[in-house]
Length: 264
Length: 310
Ligand SMILES: Nc1ncnc2c1ncn2[C@@H]1O[C@H](COP(=O)(O)OP(=O)(O)OP(=O)(O)O)[C@@H](O)[C@H]1O
Ligand SMILES: [Mg+2]
Image (cartoon, chains in turn green, purple):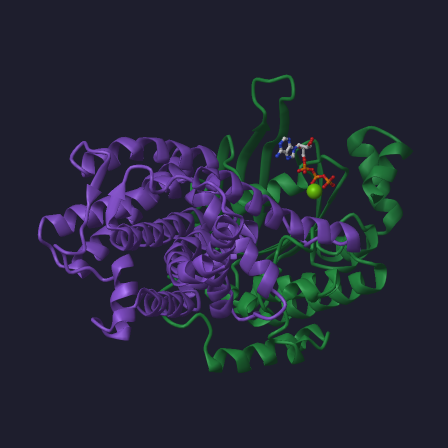
């Protein structure tokens, strides 16, 4: 479903701040793969997701989604295939617009926006239904401005928006990191329900080792701009947090300081 | 005192005309969060095009439509500078405004002004109509307050419809959160182009109406338009934000804001008997006061408008 081939991404090329964020990055996701992504700060996790989403162009390599090369497509065109939730709860929704307006925008992802009505009666009803999966009571607040919602509610709404139109690829960048533990687990559970219901191909970055092991069918670890560990199936299910930390020490050739980084 | 009340209908009429410009500015400044300085130029473009079209014998409605299109073209130029060439919005507008100075002169046949005498042309609005209606030589429907009021309501109605469509909603999303908009597949650059074009179209339409109202187009007629527009938006917000939540009413608040601005200016001039040379200074002071109000309020209550910059 997703194919990343030999991707390289350099920031501030040719300056003192030059940073090779990704190099020799290769990743192949089969349809329905739910992959958790871990790695220390600056390992390139967000850069990988942003490169796939088209936030910025890559310097080398190719990216394919469901067999279609998207390497040179602008972000808004790739959005047709991709649903995204960001770390910052403010980033995924329009605060000054209503819940139903945000959903209506998301329902038209990848479609031509015409002079037809921006939201129809039938849609409103369907959004009421769709919001129930979040178990947050938002179905009774369709016309509330999103700016009035809590961070967790906004993340949950962003998640629903990302998946309202079944995406070929769901990209989650630490989407629960800014939430308190209770809200975070609620949003994670909603994520699980939605991914399972629609059998979505998913990349989920997290700094929480337990979540990385508990969720998904496959786990990758990034270090220094590429994938260094890739486990799946039974092997992944049986992983422990200690084993993960050991793995990380081995690839980074280092000790506790890095372990702390890995845990965030 | 009497001089103020005598001048009132004229001040309100002018305010309504400038209100159309302010509604245009609202689209870029408030909805898209772009500071577009094209308006000082495109306002004059509208006046110049309208005057020349009518002098050439065209019908007033044709002249207004062509003025609107000319304004859209000016907005398009700014949008290309900004979205295609990557020049900051504020500078893009300044560049277009500068270039328009020459273009506007050229439109008027290399003259600094063009008369549009109400005696010779069949105008939609004119200062003269104020007196004519009073004397009974014209029907009330030709009173500038009535005509421009109707045009304003029509514009608000069309904008209300447009920003409720799929495309219109995506333009609102572009201004509200460009990051989210792109993630939802919205071409934010294209939407900025559309927004700048509609905005400057309305600005030019307003200029066209003012040229008719005052009986001439002038190369300086748009000078300070941006200040008047901002004043109208802010006055409308300060006075009506608690009352008007609906989008159509918010647009009307902008129009009323422009009217309040003109009435206040008129009051200052006629009540204090100030030389009209001080007009610009007074305008700047009034705008500064209204701009300061929301900030001062925010400080006293310790809260600020939450605004997200992606
Ligand atoms: N827009 C940018 N401009 C310059 N450098 C950047 C940019 N984005 C990321 N980098 C750099 O690229 C490297 C990889 O960053 P990235 O954000 O992908 O890390 P990450 O794995 O997501 O880390 P974290 O766990 O802290 O989120 C870092 O060194 C970072 O400083
Ligand atoms: Mg990151």
